[in-house]
Amino acid sequence: MNQLASLAPLLLVLLASLIILLLEAFGRWTQRSWHATIAVAALIGSIFLALNWWEKSATYFSGAYMMDKVAIIFMVLFSLAGILVILLSFPYMVDHGFNRGEFFSLLLLAITGLMIMASSEDLVVIFLGLETLSVASYVLAGMKKQDEKSSEAAIKYFLLGSLASAFIILGLAFFSAQNQSLNLRQLTSLATDKLESPLFLAGLCLLLVGFGFKVSLVPFHMWTPDVYQGAPTPITAFFSVGPKAAGFLVLFRLFYSIMKMEADVSSIQTIIWILSVLTMVVGNLIALRQRNVKRLLAYSSIAHAGYLTIALLSRDGQGLTFYLLAYLFMNVGAFAVLVALSAKGQEFHELEDFNGLGERRPWLAAAMSVFLLSLAGFPPTAGFLAKFYVFSTAVKQGFTSLIIIAVLASLVSVYYYLRVIVHMYMIKEAPALPAIKAEPPLLLIVIFFCLYGVFQLGLFPARLISLIRQALTTSLP
Image 1 (cartoon, rainbow, N blue to C red):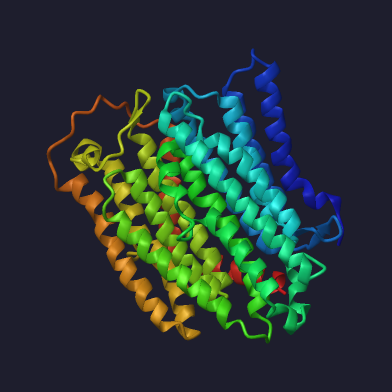
Image 2: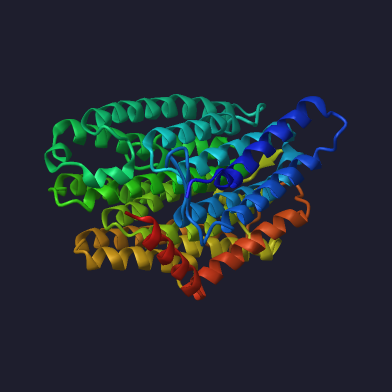
């Protein structure tokens, strides 16, 4: 069904971004809190408009844009991530003196790019969405204008991101030379001799390099630690969830279509296998040496990208989607706690800053412990079930050796997650920090909601799993 109304969730977010930008430019008399209100209202409205299409199926632009159930799930994920980031960034911006109008406008523009990527199977349209996301992200990374690390993060992100985009464009050129269409769904009808041609494989590898940069696969991860540390903490939370989810969705759709064919794809599987191992091992081992918790979470994010790559290899769309939803709650929650440890325009994120946090701010320490244990994969949290679903499916498909490596890598990660908890509860020597005021109500809402998500998905996942399975059954070719 070809309907213009299917564009409504996307257009609402884009319209809100433009309205906020105009209010910032010409509405100096308008209270700055209106910017956040408009942004949150637009994202909530986008969620309801997207869910309205759950029992329908619509396309537009000759099928380049589609509103299927998988796209709806990821639109809800992106909108929810945006709402949480806005809520936790509002008190943060007051302390750090941000220009709120351009912040919220750029954030909504980045979410628009994510939605475009999730709602298309045409590689050209996906690339347009990726560039919309990237341009907004480069500016967001450098929002702390007085901080040299923030400016350095923005420059590194821009330079390496531009290089990744060049790889994707070259990959699209090789793709189009072998296949007249760049629609991922039509790859299933590609002749076997073309699929096994060097030109097609080269294009596929170039696309993997480009999108591997966006999801932080090793060895394309170099930007991640510096950008995560230098960017404003709320934006770091967004970077760790949004681009990763969209990038893995694109990669899943790409490799699902190819691996479904009868051609020999062993070389492609070997490449993905190696990338997964490198990402898990390198991410976890380097995280052991980190003293800054933001950098620690950056390498943790790299390691989790390795676990998610296992789902690509085993064509496990259900495990991939559930993992990304669980990762939203536990990672945004961890960064929300880091936001709470910011005061007077400074961030206190070194391991020593967590000394005695269990006594100084017990509720905050307890919440951080839950998020870290979930990232490590302890039951009964969402992180445990996310890894269990991905690992069990891969074992059933014969990737036992890969899962052994993944389990060992997860055991390594337990050390650096527990090290933060040790500093919070077992090292009593409190650091000499300035007095930090009580957590703002909006920040408490974000932390509580993330805690609820971590335990809800960890204890009662059946309903969500059913929805994901239904979406994949109706949406995949």
